[in-house]
Image 1 (cartoon, rainbow, N blue to C red):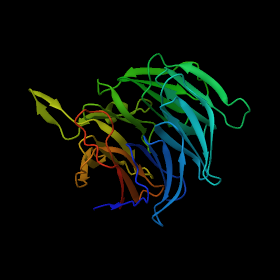
Image 2 (cartoon, rainbow, N blue to C red; image 1 turned 90 degrees about the vertical axis):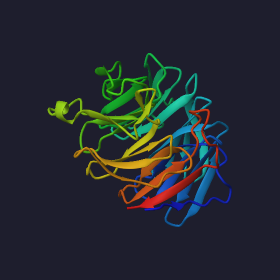
Image 3 (tube, helix red, strand yellow; image 1 turned 90 degrees about the horizontal axis):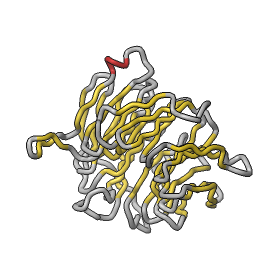
Length: 314
């Protein structure tokens, strides 16, 4: 199950922060710290475009096949016309913009930053900023599931209703008990999966009748250090489309592991990468998995080898 490496005429020169497949095709969006957003056609093994943004890109998302957004280290949220190859700024944060996503239910771009703000943008309006609300602390990652927005602050989870955004309708401490590094929605339910900085993964289904039965946590590659369990930071969690319950985790030691959320079983492990696994992405059919092998600037002893992207076929 070895993956094919994507070839770039001009190599990616700094850490990869995010991979994202387009909603309907096998075009892959790649955001990186070298300030470029790249769009790569996996089927033809060719780079479609490469757009410069002046700041490190920390996250990216699609609105549709022709429009995408990024969040940057300069705080700006930018929109990309992938057909015309143009970039424009829709607004920004007062500090590093950590996350960006598009909500089809809300018809809005949602961004967060180290300025403790959650911002909502409607690019159809002349004044794009619709709402800015205070999260109370710097936000590292977010996800949406229908009309619910999950905002992760340290080890806490705050759930907002996109139809009433003044304050979260539910807040609680995550099962991982240490800072959350990544979060994603569970496609077959109203639940969420989070990955922590010490190798824990937790699945939670707060709004289901069987939440007590399905709520659980486990460790990826646990190690014993000074009598305590320790694991590598989980940088990415991605579920396969279609509701099978299969998901993959990628960590700072270069491991990608497949799990089944329903049976709570480990399915398989890909060959270890020489660098950290910075990001993972499934295509819309779940037949392709993109893996970013890249340093992440999280640990002093990380290898800073040239970042690479691999495509695995299932």
